[in-house]
Image (tube, rainbow, N blue to C red):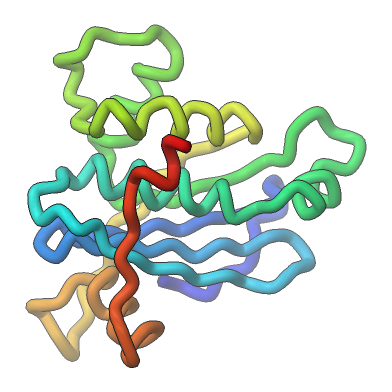
Amino acid sequence: MTSQSVTPDSDVQIEVQVSKRGGVWAFELRPLNSRTTRVTGKLPSKGATRHTLLAVAITSALLTIHEKEYFRLRGDKKKPTVVIDIPDQPFITALERRRRSKAQPNDGFRVSRNLLRPLYMQLARFDVTLRFQPQKKNKDSAELSNAERLTRRWFSYGETVFSPAVLTQ
């Protein structure tokens, strides 16, 4: 993940990375005038789709912004503005289509149904802009994805396992 600052037109910038092979997701949350937060996790299911991993990462990132921070970022606006960098253009297209029109189930949006409601609830809290940012290839280790590399760097002492049941409670 890059260490870019928050874009001038947003209050929070979130960069999401996933690795379907290991069920690993990671995000970097950069609020305006606040500390950067990096979180990574791993779904216990190896069969999770890339879209499910992205949905878990985005929901977790938005849940990380607690109420006090939310009101500080909001100021006199109705909602804080958030820019989310996502490395999967079909996910962005399907999510935007689904948010606008409640499209049909076979619209290319491959997210577990139990994650849709928490994802929509968190997206509704903010004025969200989804932006495509392709995953960068790292020269030192071609076989590892960015998410797997971040997991090893941030949590080299152990493994974090995330349960989707936490989001649905």
